[in-house]
Image (cartoon, rainbow, N blue to C red; front, side, top):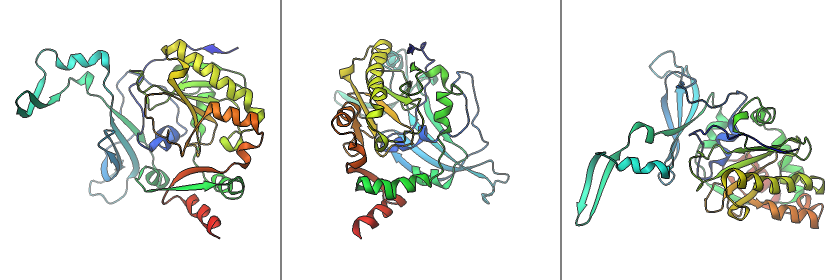
Length: 339
């Protein structure tokens, strides 16, 4: 029987923006641990910036590559690599009025008739910066976070079996963090809902891109208990009970917990996904979440209907998606398509 879990403690942490959904949540690694309000330290000493991998003024986010744990201060390369992502957090409506109470610290930028612009320096409790750490970082992580041009490709069912799948199986990025969640070894206090059925069940958990401080950017992830379903390409009618459970029970749980109705939610899968264990995204319909473009997002209701109409739909259909210009898979697909 599915159970609605108790209210999880809220955290002010969420990774990535833009097209960076392939980033932080997918790179949690094998370490385990749940959030705490107690003061903590970064998992390394020192941070010497080597390169700004990516930044976005629109999203108020910056990705930094740095050297840490250096034994000397002369930058001779004896340290380890780390990626730190700094992101300004969204305003919390119920607290924003505090910014203007009393005599806030201001610096006037300009004034003209009825218009004036200031720099306002908020108090500590209203000025947190979400900080995500990938440590130790490998060359794959550095390339993943580095801004790159994108290319659109079309992958046939044959391309997937002969090119994409062998390429993916040769990669080594771990999804142990997914199993840690499913086995309650990590983030158990953050589970919003669970259907424990090992075949057709799932856990529903807030995505780390959502601070849980407001509903405008609501974002949860349903992770299926069943292992071995990598992506959309693996889905057959055998998985319809699982997919229907995720859609129905996920919407019901979100309605009960957050009072957000099903017709106010966007429920979809990514292809290509950021990590290869089947998961479904639930986002507020008005939120322009990363990865909701037509070249990547597939609505779960449409996926269910496609499988009902054609059992082999996702084994045969040509799928379009974007790849980074330096992605080895792009070269492999382009070679076979031009030969």
